[in-house]
Each structure stands twice: as structure tokens, then as C-alpha cells.
Image (cartoon, rainbow, N blue to C red):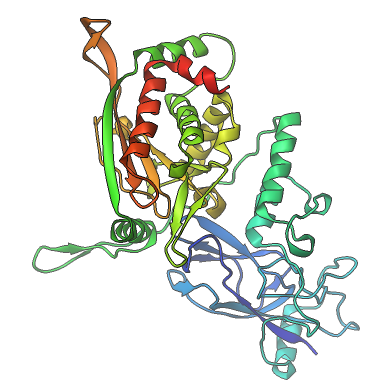
Length: 437
């Protein structure tokens, strides 16, 4: 007898509660293998192919393309466990889904389905009702699809890793640690697969000359996040003009020698991480339910990137542990992925501080809205020649405006001002950074 198992939409990233079906990759009646991608969905953060943890025959799909489903809603059902005499199909799940969608432990080896899909579908009528796939022997540690995808895209064998989670569960941090170690030994470029264009809300024109556009998808997510930031965070902004002439000369000197080019953003990021080491109060968030300030000892630096899909904020992991060259390379990689639409939810979550270089739009200043639930954001305007008093005389210098918006719950103006002044000092005299090396 075949057993019908129900596969539900898993949690695809921090804070995500729903996803829109962009494209089904399987039809009812198709035979699917364990971990085969079955549907492509778009969350508020990225487009993701979702793999199914079961091998068997698709008996039902839930939702048409364009439908938005909440996390935990059924995606499809699969008939597994056909009689051994008629098939040598693997009847167990991979176990590689999020806890709560549990499947059993995998068999010793994987075999391919031979039985015709129609025969298996016929036997579904006598199968038990669809369920979660649990086998009655309690939950087992399983690896999330995001972790497996991260490992698969970078050619990493999960079997070779030791998990740091409960019962040896392999976490995203374990994969990222292994990737950093591998990158130190060899620089192998991974070619990203270009995803199809994202679906966009369709504007609707009314008879009175008004156009209405549904506020959903990435635009809706940005609206919700910014509204929540303004609603929950008592923010304040301080700003200062700084003479960036020496910073630009330093960058020119760096790029005059052989090696990868250093971006201005990378230099500003290096300054930010040094400033956060001196003023760690700003590398934090507020747990409103517990009424606690949560301070982080690692800097995961977000940066604003404008794409055709809208504004996204990729995150550079462990920015505090990267030198300027490594920061420049990671900014370039994430920016290219953002423009190609290949950022994963893991690339867009977990930030602890955000750097916003709005100077690329040709503007001098701004009052940034904090990227909730972080506690601060540094905004950087364009660097332009302006009259400036330098060494007692009027001169034309490269000047930039720096703006810091901060959560007044985590610190007072003295701390915020100290942070911003230190950033400005490093911009004006890059040698100041040498004191922290």
C-alpha cells in the first residue's frame, strides 16, 4: 500500500510568514525523487526553489501560480511506499526538512523509481490519509532546506561536517564556517544560476484616472518593515560633514598596486566595524517582549542595494573579521547576486548594523530609517569638492556628509555622537584606523 504524505511550506527565513507561488516544477502524476525541487516561490526577500523531502508520485498540488500561501500551509501530497514487488523506489523521506515536517531516517542507499506513476496513483485510494510524515518514533534532528541549498550551491558535502546544533544538527553557521575555511585554501568561483524574472504586482487603472498597485511582495515587505521601525523605535539622527580627501587618496594608493580593487564602500565598512568595536551599544537590538537590550559580539553588516525588484539589504557576515580587500570582494559578490535576483534568504537576514551609501544617487544627506530590529544605521552622502578650511586656509576639499540614525533606547546622544565623530575622524585621517590593528 502506498502512503500519502503531505509536504507543507517550510519556514524559508527569519521573519517570513508567507510566500507566493511563482512556478510549479512538477505536475500531478509526476514521479519525484527525494530532495527534488518541486516549486519555485518568491518571499519578501528572495526567490527560492523548494525541495520535497519525499520520493514518490505527486497526487495533489495546493495553490495556482500567483497564489500567496502562509508558512505551514500544504504545498503538495506525495504517494510513497509502493509494494516492494512492483517497485524498488525509496519509500522513506530524506529527513532534510525543517523540524515539525519530520520524515524518517533515510535508508542505506537510494534507488530509482521504476513503477509507472499511474499505477502508484491508482493505489492512493487505499492509502492512509495524508499526514506530516512522522513515523511514531519521535522527532529526529533534520537539516533545513536553506542549509542544504547553501552547501549544495558551494559544492560542500554535508556528510563531512560536524554539526554544532542539538544532537549534532548541522546549522547554517557550520556551513558558513566550512566555506570560509575552504576559501582560505582555494578560490573557486561558483557560477550562480540565473532565476527567472520576479513577478510584480500589476497596477490597475480606474475610471477616475487613479492607478492602484497592490502593496505586496518586496514592496509590501519594505513598507511593513519601515512602518514597524517608525512605530516601535524612538529614533534620533545626528550628522556631520567630514573632509574625505585623505580617504580618497588612501584608496587611490591602495588601487595603484597590484591586486583586487578596493571600493569606497569597503573602506567605509572597515571604518564602521572599528567604530562598533569602540561603541558596541550600537551593534544591538531591543527585545521588546523581554524588555532587554541584546548586544551582539559579531558584526553582520547590511548594506542597501537598489535593484530592479526594489531595495534589498544583503548582509556581509562577520564583517568585523574581514580586511578591506575581503570586504570589497564580498560587497561585489552580494551586489551582483542582488542584481541577478539570486540572493538567498540567508543573504538577506541576520544583520546587526546597516551601512547606507545613498551618495550613489547624487544626494548629499538623508535621515535614514533604521532597518528593524537593528539599533542604528549610518548614511553616507556623495563625496564632492567643496570649499573647506584646511590647516587654517580656505581650500577645495572632497567633503562628505555622514548621518547616523540610532535607537534612543540602546544609548544616549553622547554614545551616538562619539561613534559618528570617530567615523568622521577615520574618514578625515585614515591612519586613525592603525591604532586598532
